[in-house]
Length: 278
Image 1 (cartoon, helix red, strand yellow):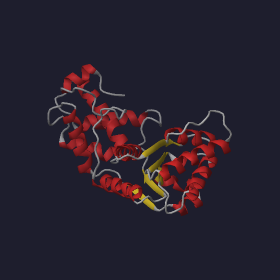
Image 2 (cartoon, rainbow, N blue to C red):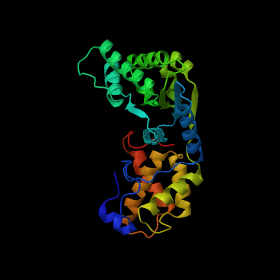
Image 3 (cartoon, rainbow, N blue to C red):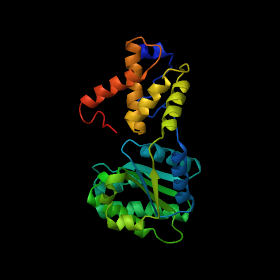
């Protein structure tokens, strides 16, 4: 989804400000997000073993992990950034080893993949290189994959260890990680939804960065956008994007609250996967 070229011209946009892809999208962290990012950075700097990032679905966890990965890489660290959705033990070991710079062989049995990964982690430890394993969607991981993660946490528990693992999951599904992993967490980081001010600032900044004039969304429209999205970034993007499309189609000069409500009603009436009301 994204505002089409004809519709972008109506608003004076050079690109779609609320597209699903993170490429070119406005990067925004509210004060809660900045605090969460600082706490994750502390984990890496102090070389703690395990962090847990919790938030709502669509709440910005993946975006925060991507920024952390970029910062650690820029500072000379080595990062593997994976999603655990439907990943089995062998796939986790292979992907982690490959992203950390090893050369795993496809089809190797689990014990060889484990050795390849742990040898690479040991090599990075000898080099005193900060090593970061980011595991998104951890609440959707298989039990076998979570067992591998727990084993990694405990095998890298010496003072010389340079490996930090960060798991990201939804608030209401963290218990799926199991008692062993949850007990090993050194720091839990909660990512809160945006406030009404956060939502308004994000929408206005995103539009400005995409070339729009001020005042595309009326104040009442921004308030309604926040109320209907619950301050969840993914929902904010969905509603704002569709509101721009609808407004351009109707040749509106500004997006008002009724336009936001109309596109919300369309999304809520569609398939459950399209939009989950706040």
